[in-house]
Length: 80
Image (cartoon, rainbow, N blue to C red; front, side):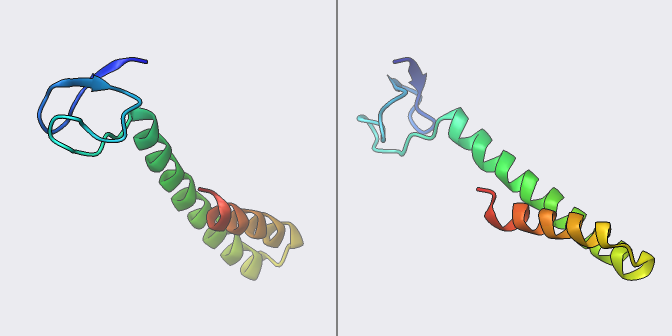
């Protein structure tokens, strides 16, 4: 257990607390924030890869472009 500062009132609270016992503000750990941002970045990149390889598949006609596009689509849809 580590002590962190509350983002609202600045008092030291447990990192395992769900909310600040002093002001009631929800506690969001840095790990949770990084996971949310990282997941969003992966989904955005996968969406761009999907579109690029879909267009390449349409113009170049290779099946490998469609396979990569399908994999990128699945990553974009199911990655959390």
